[in-house]
Image (tube, rainbow, N blue to C red; front, top):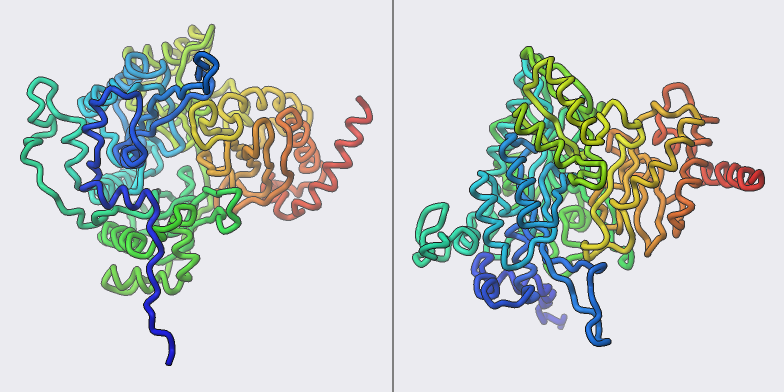
Length: 585
């Protein structure tokens, strides 16, 4: 007789065990918050991510005590959700103030249109969360195994309702996919005087075990990212997301959305089973079905995602395991009806919205480049102080872009000179004064606080750009737009795997170079060279650009050229060029 012994389910990961036992993300966070220790235990560290905070260790400020092993320097990174990157001047001012008063004196604009603070100590976490709430924002679900900050194009272009309708649909979806748990309010928003009434209403001591109709008791197997994009403007890198919606519109009217699923950049170098992926085109839905199809896809990931191995727990691996057609069939089952085929509309443009633009209502918006998203004052460069003046004196609307920069909105024509003067008075260049190369570059935080980082990123990319700018100018490519993205590890927070040039930390001081993605964000790049010392990156990239200059076709972009020639062909040409260049020196 055949063996009928049932096959046991894979053992869930430690994170899954912690979530299951947490009573809807409560766990022991409240008790540990008051225990006087500098950090939290392992289960709480994982649960805290769903509340919007990561426990971190600043590896550079560890201090050896009496010859013993250095002590961890624990602090917390806190991320604020900003759906679509939309803020008021007062909200951004408050965030900057919180960075000074409770953080490390800076804030960071992220690649997902949100705000990060670093250096917050455990004893001030609760005050920080309450101040975020008072600022009419939240950190709930900014991290963790849930839907994270949803992105869309931030440009306030009036006269065409498409962008406003897209932002409104995003706002609906953000509310719909938000966790229902009251744990966030109980733990962080209790009134400091009574300890009972929450700032959000209700009474903490009357809390009951609630239901999570979308997420269930264990939430998702891994993080989940969503973005909206326009065919003519993929500034959100929609194909890099777990779930994407491409707006299909004609004559100022949204017909519906092409639905994408299964994008994701993260890779674990030691695990060959991991890979970057672009989302796949799944089907078309009318506007009224956006919430329902999103919920269906989230629930399929909830029920079929890998809960034993977090390395392969993202939606891209669920689709890879199930197969796209089986995945689509399961989504249709949860959705309750068949999906229509995708509309032919697809991505064909990308605008970072930097510089001055008319809004279409008699006013203007200004795209201001913030290098790697870091807002700080250092020496004569006083960006933080300049931003405070702009926000207080001019009071523009504010949008965060997916390229870590800012849009100041609702400006008058006279504000152009005022903003330029404020920036110059504080040693800050206007967007018009920076190179195209710098404008299209971005980096993740990396060292010293990110626990996953194996190499520098944010702190060294500006210097790499400094060394590349004169070489790019010599080649006559100063006005060519191509994306250059750098990360301190293969987890790829700055989306390096679909850029023209990707630089990914391999080990301390050494990197892997990738070529052949493109500015549109709809093609993965390919491995070019591995274990390249930081000191050689500028020469290696210059050689690639020299090859591009010599052999490109008219109007051919860098990424398209590398894709056409192939990385092997580029490498052969570039190595010969490097040998000649080194021979001359």
